[in-house]
Length: 450
Ligand code: TAP
Image (cartoon, rainbow, N blue to C red):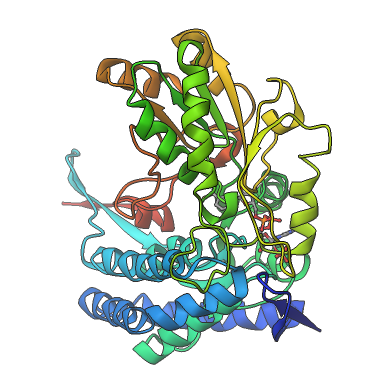
């Protein structure tokens, strides 16, 4: 069995990729277990050195990885370069971890008590198609740093950059079997990573629906699990904000990666007294988003990832939708959808569900309490922005919004050095930041009588 990879910008066939079977997945897991036993015995400084070499190999392949992502995922080339450099940064950051996974010495009566952070063994990393290589690195880099092996299953639509990363790891000198990428279907390879008892942890990023299924599967073996799931984040604009800046940047808070971003601020909440003015400013900002060939340096937004996904996004904007205005997009071939601004009712489908496309809904709000209550409506809680010149209010609202990643007067969500993850049904656990390697260890307590 194989899967045909299609360039989403022009619908040409890029290549075909073999889809692994259950038996091949089991064999990969067995190889990983063997490699892990040896890896755990490698001196911490040598493990650190190998991870730095892996980072250097990625650094040397930034342009190649970026071009792969342009063709496989339709990402604008500038964004794809950022993604490849981010993978390098994540590897570099966690290359320090092998020598810093400290245990503790705890005062007790009658002896010496110490803790060790032991690796889990084999970790399964299951990734979505929207940011294939960055999200993969968030899982495999801290897992390897903490002494584990990693078996990565990329999304069937977008395996190419992950497959290249596995080769770069080998070229950098990682032991054979320690980091493997097994392409194939979620229902085959993904399921097997969950059910195979040698795999001690699953790191899953994807839809809330599949995440719940994976969590239930992990529960059967009390398998450790980290979940990064969907979002419907709010961008809250108060009347005292720098309105020009808030409006000029709002499109980039939602239309980046064509809105296929779990952190997309897909609901813009604007204080009623400045709503009209904000919409006047937003319209030219949306029209100014450069949508087109992802291989062009000036492109800011490319196509959607696949025809099936384009159909899903279209279903949120029927002919009678409350469209305020739209940007432009090529007509095809390719899976194009223009940046679209809706003004729907608060209880409409577009206002409640994750669209995962370049569609944003704008709503007026009455006061701070109304804004926070509406931001918190629904089951998600991943990200969000607050625009105000009143820093006390910025902090107060940030504390009030039930979300894992908030920014005040900014739309940034992701830094490799800070924790990332969701409240409520947006996820479980945190990735990135200084503590991520700990999530790939068990704490062992040893008491020595003296
Ligand atoms: P999903 O359909 O959930 O797929 C994610 C991954 O899970 C894919 O590799 C998929 O394989 C695999 N999978 C599917 N069924 C499985 C099963 N039964 N057992 C094990 N694995 C299975 O998500 P998607 O459509 O690729 O991604 C979009 C979603 O991801 C959105 O909801 C988005 O918000 C979320 N997301 C969240 C974050 C964070 S950090 N919170 C980041 C990015 C995306 P196939 O490719 O074969 O289906």
